[in-house]
Image (cartoon, rainbow, N blue to C red; front, side, top):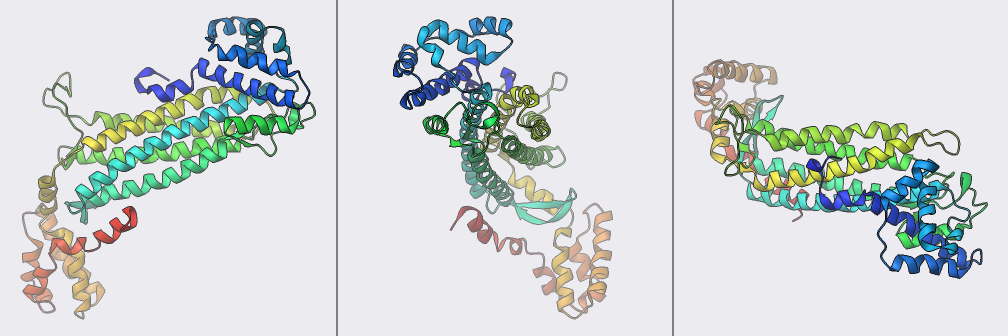
Amino acid sequence: MIPRYSRPDMAAIWTPEARYAIWFEIEAHATDALADLGVVPKSAAAALWQWWATKPAIDVAAIDAIEAVTKHDVIAFLTWVAEQVGDEARFMHQGMTSSDVLDTTLSVQLARAADLLIADIDALLAVLERRAKEHKLTPTIGRSHGIHAEPVTFGLKLAQAHAEFARHRTRLVAARADIATAAISGAVGTFANVDPRVEEHVADKLGLAIEPVSTQVIPRDRHAMFFATLGVIASSVERVATEVRHLQRTEVLEAEEYFSPGQKGSSAMPHKRNPVLTENLTGLARMVRGYVTPALENVALWHERDISHSSVERYIGPDATITLDFALARLTGVIDKLLVYPERMQKNLDRMGGLVHSQRVLLALTQAGVSREDSYRLVQRNAMKVWESDGQLSLQELLKADPEVTAALSPAQIDEKFDLGYHFKHVDTIFDRVFGG
């Protein structure tokens, strides 16, 4: 992942040093368990931990040099550790296979990444709640197909996003639990050369569950679900980002990204204030979703195992989590500093001559005894005059001048149907559902 879209805590999970540290812990904990079972001398486990207690620097370059010869990363690591620890290191990896180390390590990394992503969502939820309550009753126009529909509040838009990301938090917690399993079962997963109690011990020490049937590799349906969850979260990031981008368009300008002092929007046009952060989020979301399909294709491995998944996961593990971590933090910042323009929202509400109240008049006519078909015809013929005048005419006044309408509704009854506050009478109910009473 490129540094431009990386944050330090998430990137640190995926460094070679962090990966090798987990490898060592797996090997040392397994050696502890083997010593307790009498398979290897207790001195072997003690020697490993004594060396580790010196806080040795992991020499990535040295390990890479060994791998250049062995063409096997786990063997290269074990060789390097043996060079540091000495003769007792020969008892490492007893009965284990490389997948025991690699798959369990990936589980640890993905679980740690999930913890950071859950914290990211918590931060986003807090900002969404604060801004939603701030604009709980800020009137704005709701749009369907991009066209003015009926009034909503800006707070409801943000409350919807909050409910959406609250669902994502639940999904991510479940995905974390699903991915956090350990497999120390040996070749083809039969435990023929390593006691299941070794796996139990390692899993306990690393905070993982045990994989019921690992067939030498942890089943990749777990990974597919994890990355699919990240992809769905990314789609919601893009949905909110797209909403902000639309609201920032010059013709709309109901909200916009914060534009800091000294910021420049265009190298050619000094007046520009572009939605660069949310455009960036749209691109990042596409990248995260792009990692979902390879994860799904990794599920179908040959027989008990192959390594067709391995190269894929070396990409998508770091890239998907680092990218989504950055995107969630960026979205939180956008919402936190979002500039909201209630006056422009009201101006846009009013610009189409009251068309947004057409449904209330339609319903009032039906309740006054006019058929639905005739009610629709009467309201629509007046509404189209307003539409074609680009909002210069008033639907309210046209209806009061239409004898077929006034035969059923008095002018006062028509006026009452243009009350903006009517549309917000259940906002409290919706907010209670989202945020609690």
